[in-house]
Image 1 (cartoon, rainbow, N blue to C red):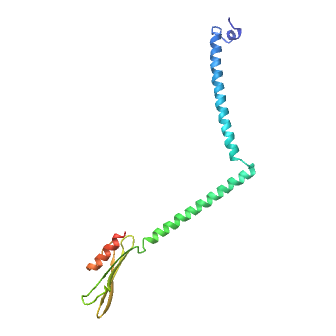
Image 2 (image 1 turned 180 degrees about the horizontal axis):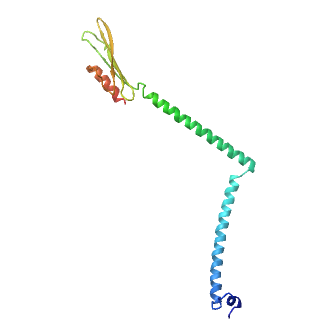
Image 3 (image 1 turned 45 degrees about the vertical axis):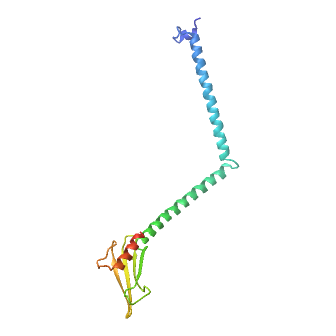
Length: 170
């Protein structure tokens, strides 16, 4: 059977059964696509209804505006905290955070370990050592500067021990 419609389009030799078969497959694919899209639309509607539950457009707009304002406040607070932490770290570089103390008897006739060497260092091992020598004729106190964990002046055994203890704490 020859179709006038197909002949007029220049497709007179085309088998009508093949055309029907191809159109059936296309229709089947279209039905599957409609089912998938309907399922996705249903899921989207559920999410939308959950998002807007009990709210109208005006209250939802206000809530989103409030969230943006809160977010901005949190960012500003975070930036302030970062600046404050930088200042604190800068200040900590010069504070004494390492301490070493050695008590000793400077002279044999003295007891009770009244003499001491105290090392105070910052994070970069800069600071000083205070040495106090207690004897029968008085108490003498002096200090030695420490730069990078070293002194230009020769350290005594107790001073060296105090410096080592302080540097171990870092």
